[in-house]
Amino acid sequence: MLGLLYTICKTDGITAVVSLHQLEFARRYAEHIVGLTRGSVVFDGPPTKLGPTEINRIYGTVARAETMARKTGTYA
Image 1: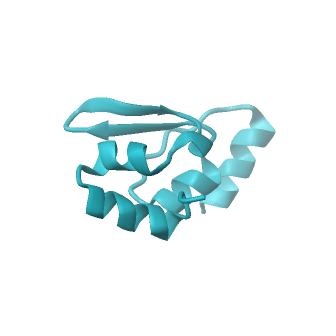
Image 2: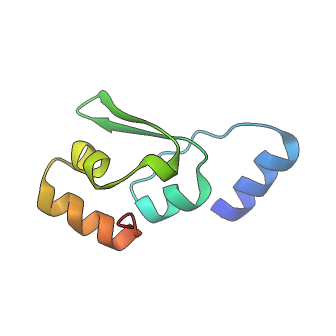
Image 3: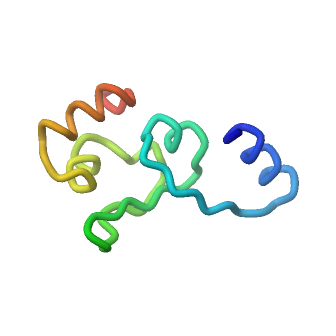
């Protein structure tokens, strides 16, 4: 579904705002990610800049951030 939505948006030159909690999908389909924690923006940028430190800011704990980073391949 996200692939189809991405294709439609690119073809028609439109923007879609999608709320995702799966980083692997956000990194694959988004051109821009805004990460929120408790209603505040803690990350605002391209998926390539979403690393372990930024994931930690979004999710709160180092252990959880490291787990998410491993699952989404953000450790290079």
